[in-house]
Image (cartoon, rainbow, N blue to C red):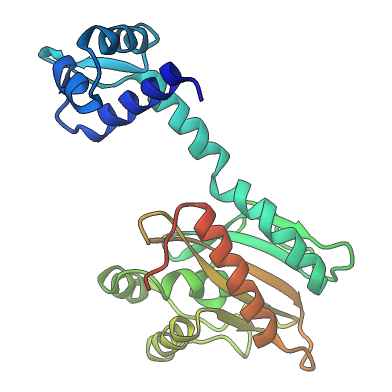
Length: 251
């Protein structure tokens, strides 16, 4: 390993960890290296815009715009849709279903990704479509994991109506459904949105542990199919996606 490159990255990490900025002398002391050697590396990083001087104090250093740019490129590469596009096709093909990714927008779910398995029977719902969250597995999976106050506020605003004869149409029953969803880790929609379809869903969490989306597998309703088995499998895939976004499950 090249010693100079190693030192440069160590200094960059040291600066990143210093919330109030750090001086050249502090860098040299922490790195246990001559101040002159530290100066050469710091100046190079400064000229390349990977670090900058702290506002109103040119003796201290902080991260620069190029570091931020690199970080954002990494975040974009690890974005929700990108990760879902890697993990969802295999399980969709395994069960011959259509996979969806949805995010919450008020009391609606917006569909942001879709993958149709080769032998899937269902391919409805275009990207950008908005559906009532309370009648979808995607919506239930997200709402079940919202902070209580946010969840309560959202549910209070829902105007329940029967989309099919199986749709949950009361606040009390919907809250019970959310409790069941959270306890088992996945949601089910058995002909609640459309009379001919059934879906299972699972939540996606970000690095902070907040629910940000959900994934689902949809198909033509078949009472002989084991939706719970499929849902358990989908739950594990959702966890893999969450981990790829930086989520660390609580032990």
